[in-house]
Image 1 (cartoon, rainbow, N blue to C red):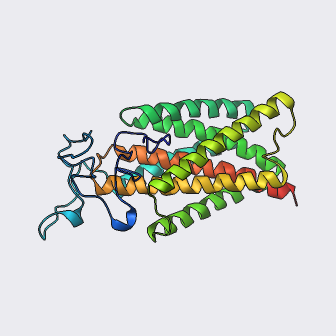
Image 2 (image 1 turned 120 degrees about the vertical axis):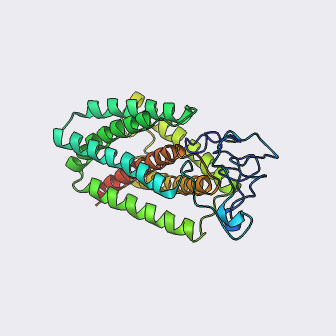
Image 3 (image 1 turned 90 degrees about the vertical axis):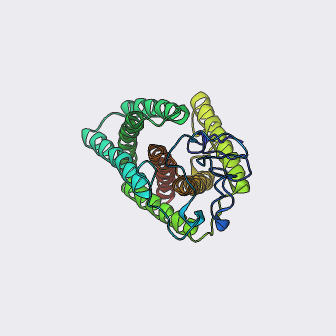
Length: 292
């Protein structure tokens, strides 16, 4: 089953053997064997490997024969690559957001930037190869939107953006710790549940927005009061679960020798997820302040 999540919908980022990310088994047991589960291996027993011609594809170091494990080849994705690319995309988001805040751009400009960012996100999700230029363009437009919307929220609920930033950092750190300690296990059941919850959440939010536009007011009331707090909390939890799936994708990509260019895809996935968590945190903080 191919995922609707941009992070898992690309070539090797799918599962056919029951587990999320690169056909790998549950993370507690480590990566799959080089032939049965590694989409970057030279031999395949299931689906063809889209990276079979990659000269750097090889099994993880702890599965290689012999006492000597060769160093990571320059054509393979590494954690440093992912960190560097993620730093670039998130840095551009922050710079664009700060510029939009300082310029005091109107709310209409922010929503126009959000629409362009959404289109770019869809394009990046379905391209055969990661495009650094398009990913950075997405980060820039998304940053403009975040700067405009954050300024708007700050004027109505003073300090809400900073609290949302701190909340996003806390959630990200918590998910990383729970993932590394195997408290969170990204397997087939986890992925199916998260994707179902994500689709349901997005559809319900769309219906709420449509009712609000047509009938005015708060729509179904999913963004105000007690129901808004519950809905916002669920949104943050879904974002946290998707973030764990991002970590799984990165871990498997490094273990199975994904090409270096795929680090842009990993950075894009992390950026999309962190923006999601921040926006849900921002709405949640605003509701909580309004209830004081």
